[in-house]
Length: 465
Image (cartoon, rainbow, N blue to C red):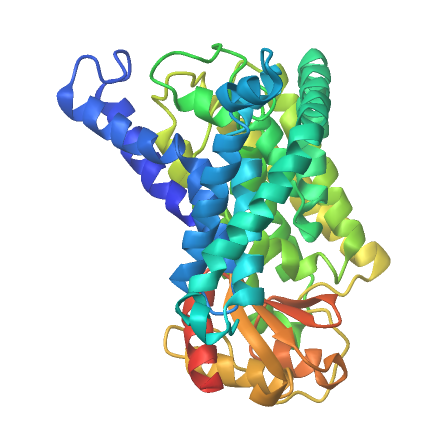
């Protein structure tokens, strides 16, 4: 998620540029053109940002060497598998798939290769004659070797993968509003696994030729008015209205003695969803406590996308479907009746509220504030000056620093690698006032903190030292 954090600046710059010159897209104003091009420089190079950001984010200690390794892998793959290079290797015209090799998927893959090589080879010790290349200096070299092997595999399978993505994208395009609904449903459903990013790359970026996000903001008019934006617009009613309504329903159904604590968590998470479009703090607050609600949420998101796609309403985002991007998208080249999304959002607010409330009460779901009463320890609720206390509570819950192998964070989660999963105490971790705890594997723990996670992570790493 590290590179995703860069995208808001692109949205702000391009949004202001389009406000200044909504018809000429920079042609009628030097300032507007400057801002639009500045924002476009980030969007156009998003794949490189993924290569670097993923490499840093997945490395054990966020060292810059991993970023260099990710960039090395990106440069090698995109050069070896470029159309010109493939034509030389094969002696024939390259498959069209290789013309799309510089995409976000390859960026993410390069970042993973760079991080993996860094984590594995950063402490390599070589004989005296080769001592100069020991340790971190060996990382880029090993990354190059691994990347060549990966490029050889991609040489065979990339045209197949690309063809499959194009076919899937074409099929979705051919189903119109229904396809938009299917995509939005799967987008939410895959979030617990983290696979929604792969799906997004098909529809929002240029992996399969749809490129909805880039075309929506493109000053070159690459999109189609009334069509471009259909894979983004349906998220606004959900993120700005639906999820906050779900939070309100959970608050109103919380136990009286826990409503204040639940309100703090749900209120902050709802505001985050409404204002920025970052939904993980709220979604993870009920995702594992009440899976049925999360499936309902995914279905309602699909319905929202379907309904909005049928309407003459299009809005887009660079970061996510929150208020900031909504306002900035008004004068984007492909925006169509964005104000129409407000009454749609009002309807989904009511639907989310009453559906969530009814299901929670019907099945007695243990959403925030409805958990079984337990002997409570000191509750540390996230506040501006409480990061140290929160980090201490989490560290105690994972078994102390002796049980922690590495600590990292994404935009909302503290990601920990541990030695012994049996000593991890979820109850103690949750006493820090966090949104939730998930365990992807026996050696991994993820703590859902919210958008303040960076401050908690900094304190957590300080405690480890």
